[in-house]
Length: 279
Image (cartoon, rainbow, N blue to C red; front, side):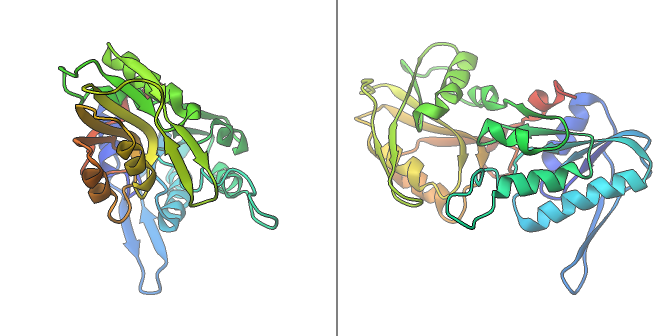
């Protein structure tokens, strides 16, 4: 049975259809004092909890769903984290800071038998879980909404560490080159980006990233491209906080595509098929 967090109902429904399993009718309630509670129907056998932790409230909801699944009779709980909040805090960057990704992973591990993440920001985050954890690659799905007639396309990652994402989307699409921007981080908020040596003049460019939060870095990346024909922005996790979508449009993005790990208007494809292969 599939149990959905309130932030992941569309993906959970797609996953239930992909697997041919029942989708539970979960109830969510918030009390006047701000505390939350969930209610699930009886569960027999395996419960798959699907919940993106896009906020602290959704993390609490996830922990409650895990516990409710056990109370409802599940003999196995599998937790799917389509988007794992705090995953980018995978180190103590200043003295006295926590390794927040580790803290979140340990908390999630207490209520589950195994975990699936989706394109988690750093692969090493899966090592923080105290139960088996597997990272699922949903990036190839981003090739699907791209036009069939891309002109001599170039698939570009925001930095060298993410080149595998650009290659993954390129391989799923078919023709094209894969490259990356030269990104230098000067501080937590100060990042400079330089274009690669690849000539993009008159060519369609597909920029690929794992997550777009505020859109500032991605917008800067688009702005340094030299006379492309069109620029398509793709990402697995389309957080798009604040005015991010406007920033991308003003920077020259022709279109923006994401998956449903975070459910937004740009969620053109579902990660359900990729997740289902691990269930």
